[in-house]
Image 1 (cartoon, one colour):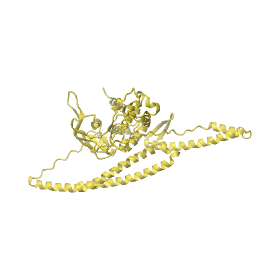
Image 2 (tube, one colour):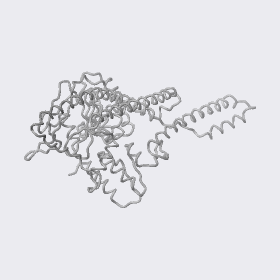
Image 3 (tube, helix red, strand yellow):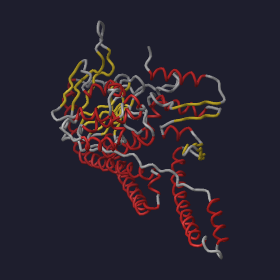
Image 4 (spheres, rainbow, N blue to C red):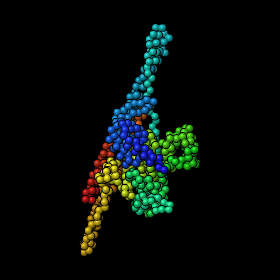
Length: 498
């Protein structure tokens, strides 16, 4: 009766618990939440045997492996180091192979020219024969294969209201027939402003998917209110939507159902941008891999030009190339984003704020993914005797005597007003700094993606590569300056609150 995801978790647990000298894991992070991946990463670091992993999670690979074996043109090549090191070495190898290939082509042309000119001449026949043997012995080099990088972009979103939606004291959960409702997240007070980019954190079962469904309007609140403002256009992706595709139909059929008055060639061009070219646009979906189905579901969402994207584990089944293309596209998306993902690279590159669901409550998470990892290992992933509880609410202060209460309230109000007046310009500056940093981080993610692409190191793109490197250095300097000022402003804010 278990779902595929839970069956996979059980199989993984069984593999880990068996005593072994060799552990083989094929996509172990699929269907795992971030907390489970972090636990698995720590467990594998301590594993004493030999480990062989197939994975599309670059952060997971960086944390676990010491050697990468790359399969290309039916050959295996070994690279020392983690995945990031492999990417650098591979890019250098592509550049070197391209230079060697061009050099050999020049040598071949020279030999062929000599043979064609002199093999008919008796005085040069012997030399021509020698050149022919040399040419025959010359092993045909081929440049390392560099496929055209997959890329797509989100269409300009429709004009958005602000705020897009508001949840007022909402309880998220499920109505149960013949029994009490299943409450998952309670007392939600949440206003989603235009342009915000949230990553949603929480352990498995905390209620992340339930909250996303409530924001998407798929689940009505059990209590409280959900207000969806006019002009809101939601693009919602979840794994169950892949199952809603018609497997007996094609990508072109699906797209034509939502784009009724658009020329077929325009639809084909659009599908081609998502790597469904030519005959693939009319191929039955039943033959597609899980990654291809997920890519099609994303393409159908993007076509509608949503101003709010709600993505629940969009990278499951996607290969590294498609994940990178999605990361770049989301970093450049101009609308509002709420993302649930176990892919740390995607979260870092596309979101600038985090929310956390813990103990049935939604709250802002003040920190980055490293802070979240530390929090998990201090709390949820710590042995029970070492677990650190969630911070408790402060105990109410002792009530002042009635005679002094009015004067005390007046003084407290004056203090609050002074603090508010002092905080306002600092908070305003912090907000502007965060907006600038978000844009620069998106630009940095796009540059990093291009530099990670081996095609960027070809001879024909030397000038473009120089520009990218200069841009990368400039963006890094700008970010460092903005972050330094942001920290300074935060310290001023903390001093005011002290």
